[in-house]
Length: 393
Image 1 (cartoon, rainbow, N blue to C red):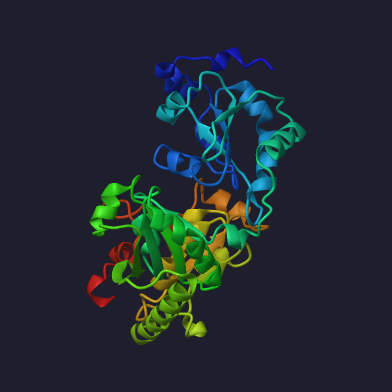
Image 2 (cartoon, rainbow, N blue to C red; image 1 turned 180 degrees about the vertical axis):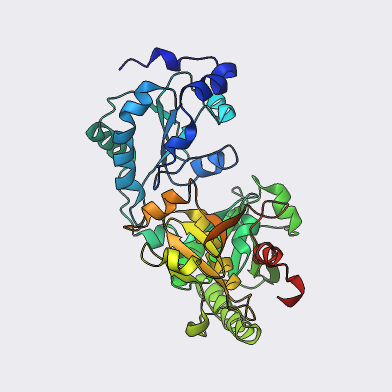
């Protein structure tokens, strides 16, 4: 298929030409079809396989085949555990990404799979051709999703956000370490054992790749097994490392944590009725809920890893305003039937997006603290600042 000649443009002129032709705002109908920006593209490509469309708003062929790509995106991205995510990058806005990826004509399609070479798709741009290509490149997952996704891989960019809220048992390791290799099967089995504990995760950090992060937590041998609770280190496991020993240790620490949460008022598995105060929004109640008072809403998708990481902190945040009943912490699944129009109206282009409403009016969007981290305290301060009642909260 020939690429449109108007799309073969020098990058230095790219932004100017696209502003003259078509503005990017009219493409904001993409949910549940995520866009990626320079701050999250690289990390996303290291996780779930991605089939990415690189486009510009001024490209006629991009516009013509966009509905086909969107139809396939809706099929794969709304799966409970997607085998591949279809996403888009607007090269008129993200010039640096597109230059780095060697994009010179539009549209360009690339398949990204962690641990494998990037593959450029040159086939037909029909729905069936896209589906056939994806099926060949990314075979269906044979193992159950909960087994496959139980051990979280942490990096310097997601570590702090992940450990905020909840209990997290983290293995700091090195790929060359013999003891690390020996414990690996027990670590996976441990994660599977505790897979139903909502506020507990089993995770790991590669200290060869993220050396600075490991030094921050005084990792001087491998493996180092560290327990974090609500963002703070609370213990290091120094005993035996068989599955039975690790299970016994973690069960004891989980009971201690539940007791701690019960005393402090934080959510816990020990008190199901206090597990969360987060209000679940839908197309039927969205406007009526946000119409009165202050409502802090998380717009999310079930397949979004960052959304899952944020869950314990979001639940904990819902308990932070006991004297302010008019303040509500809420969430809405943008992929659920009927909710898509709500998210489109709010111009949601990535997940999670956190928006604060007052009496039905959008008054602010939370993008992290000064270090771009999403902690319970930073989110609480964001809402408190809007209320102008820091001392009362």
